[in-house]
Amino acid sequence: MKFVPDTWKPREADIEWAKKTFKITGEEVARQLEEFRDHEFRRDYTDFNRCFRNWFRTADKFELLKRERVYVAPVYSEAETEADRTKAWARLNQLKGMASNVGAVKK
Image 1 (cartoon, rainbow, N blue to C red):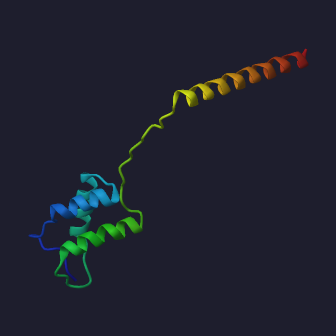
Image 2 (cartoon, rainbow, N blue to C red):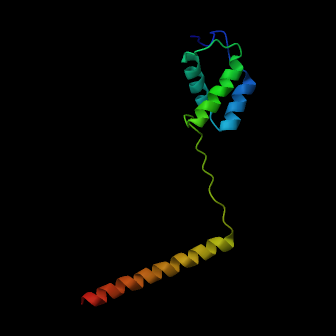
Image 3 (cartoon, helix red, strand yellow):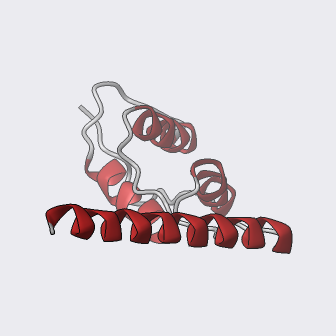
């Protein structure tokens, strides 16, 4: 069994690749790096940069990465906004009419 050497550090290019490819934060890269360092490999590896990249691919495959949550609000044109507003008022008036009919039926 083999662990990642204490002297090994991921290349900046691989860190940026992971952040961009998997849309994760630097904090998530650090978390994965910690898990990578603690992992006990079955075989002896010589290219830990390649192992590091494959670690992220595997984590992505099994949905273990904590992704950035980026919400982008939809952009509507004035015409779409006005059409939605008109529909909403029409529905509100329809519901008000239904509510007044319910009261009339009870009396």
